[in-house]
Amino acid sequence: MEKIKILVVEDEAPIQELLQFNLERGKYRVKVVDSGEEALTIAAQFQPDLILLDIMLPGADGLEVCKRLKADPKTERIPIIMLTALCEEADVVTGLELGADDYITKPFSPRVLLARVKAALRRIATSKPERNDELISAHNITIDVARHKVEVDGQDVALTFTEFKVLQLLSQQPGRVFTRYQIVDAVHGDDYPVTDRSVDVQIVGLRKKLGDSGKYIETVRGIGYRFKEEE
Ligand code: CA
Image (cartoon, rainbow, N blue to C red; front, side, top):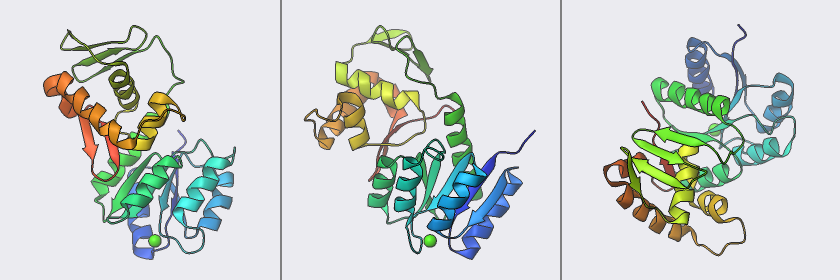
């Protein structure tokens, strides 16, 4: 079986080594480059299944690289996990809105690294074009998309239209972080006058109605929200 390919874009040698060592131990085929320019060339040729992209790079930084990868038909579908320092929350938000799938904060443990890589690859494998007859089932929550019905432990939960759309969006990709802007955008479309703060209000309402299961909608501080993956 052919190995899953991962492209690592990172300019610091010790972190390059750490990533390469752990990913190879996880049975991935790894290629490492240390600049954004190189990443753009190599990504198109190597066609990795996933890219780990450092934000702070000399020359074109990770955000610029992310934008260009997502704008190129040859690389637009490759999932990107950003590597960031703790204090780069604003960059993470920008990166997610540019199309990155996830981020890992440095320093990271090998366990977290491999779990995030696996989760991103799994989401790609299971993601399908939006279907309206879909039944989403996670934890003790069942979401009947066509009928706009939600049940927790088999009991009906009455949600508003917006709460429902938020829950649908998050639960379709468990573990994926959505920024407030992405939630507004997905729920109402670009032109709807909803502020990102009103997303917080929707989330509060949604959690309350889900009762104990409200905990599956997790706050990612400084970034946004995600639906907890099942263990
Ligand atoms: Ca760096």
